[in-house]
Length: 126
Length: 392
Image: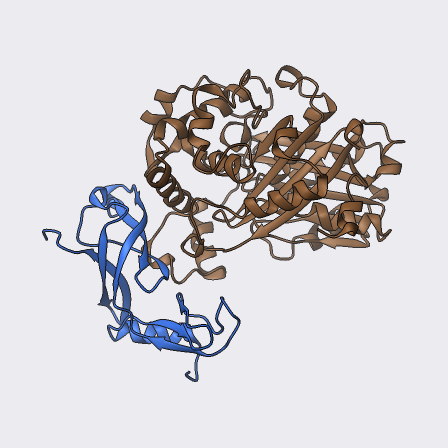
């Protein structure tokens, strides 16, 4: 699929503002995080895929931190509608407002040359 | 389950156990802790260090840890297992050691661990930053989860969402562990602890407060394994290994298939099959309680209650002294000892209970015990079943 490892390729795409997952052309299942071989069927025939970006909060915690250390921080696990799961942050709500089951949409935040996938609750007042 | 594996049931016994320095014991290195426990366990078995020709050990920090242990203890082992799957390692070491003993590769295996985690001169903050470099998790670290607690908090959030498990039920796990610890002179925390104390303690990662989290202590533990025929002639009452199995489905919490089901469901099923036992047959249970949610998950996955019922199972003292099922009778990782990795201490407590050596916390007529280890972020699970001579 490309002449470098999938981690570097994925990070370069993120740095350009693009969120990619993979799809296995052998078993048709989606894969995330990016692998060199499909963890479901063992095939090396993975291709990049732009996900819809929509998903649901699967699990949630608030990492309690002192204000001096940046304050409380949401850490969520998101199930994308493609059926893959990733750790992320819901960035448009206070940590205590993030709930399992909320519908969220991905965005890529690019800072200082690297990108990170964050999620926003749809319909939340911002 | 192959017949060969079933034939290993009861073929090996734990003949010596020891702990050293549990709690706060400044002035020792990891290796010095380990050596003290190893020497005491070999002595407990009535053997000499020169009898040891098999070694199982693991370290949180050192990748080649078995080598400095061999050098320091002066061993010349014919069997070496340095498998490192987190805190479950020392339980995961059992089945391969049984195979090595059974086929005559070696005659006496030392399983050992020591850590100065509480008193060490470098801090956990430094260690966390080194680990980010040496053991990268590039799809989780950018979100700054405090590990490992954030992973267990995420799992707890899902259990509460799906099954209505409450913070009060989580707290009751910590309260039960403390009640057992109060009967154990070796336990680090022995002050009274109430449900309200747990609920009112500092929140770390919702829904887990500091009292939902295991201790950070110093400590060391060691066990000596020999073939059953030899164990009969040694000085201590043998505790037989009836079954052991290990399973792992993920490393990072975000890769766990279902946050409410751990691979203990697999390791337990296979260990029970090897031992020919079921949860209803177990007299005393030692579960790796790194966090209060662990005890609930493992009670479910190991068949002591149905999936989703763990919270209701533990509430109001059911696993505390005098309750229906004795769980973590030493006080567990929550109140007794947790020097980075706890698995060997669960195993040692199971042996002490089956020997009848557990003093005030002794479970009467305990003939079977389950010792379960957990590693990483609910990542590796290893279940051991042990029994007295009556269970052979």
